[in-house]
Image (cartoon, rainbow, N blue to C red; front, side, top):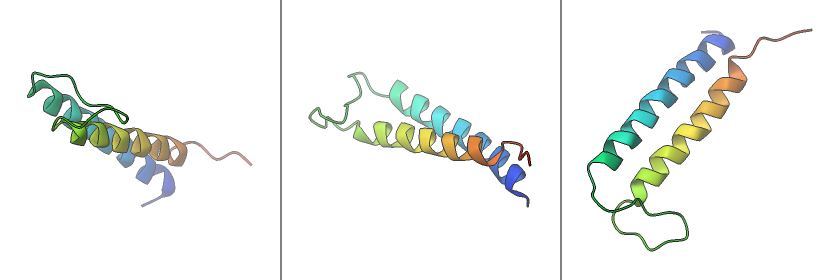
Length: 68
């Protein structure tokens, strides 16, 4: 698997993580807790979305064309 193919795969993984975070946020009635707020049982949604952003950035970097 080349570096570009791995990056594209990570982009699809990030889409799945974003959908998982969205699905989890639709299951609760109260607002999702932020980093500096008191945890009300929804902090895991913030962690899912943060992981999705990190995977998106890494996948975007790996999937870029290399120019010499």
